[in-house]
Picture (cartoon, rainbow, N blue to C red):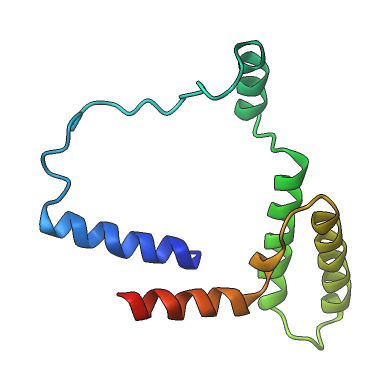
Length: 123
């Protein structure tokens, strides 16, 4: 689970245990999860079709693949024969992401550690 997810989950569980969510408006009613008001009317059908098919925009697909490779690399040793090829592929994904204007700090554990320490200081 990502660092931010862990932090949010901890605060949600604390609020639940205090009963902060007990009397919220709309409690017990189904959620409207297909809110696409931000999508222009003429694009909604196409977007919904792509969404239901599991398609992602190219930048998000690259990001997803880069995160999967980074997780895989963390699970194998540097002397493993697959390490060099996986590292090369991750570097290529990172380059493509940077060229498309996507920040790649999410691939570095250092940022997550700093963020975790900062969040714990504030708690």
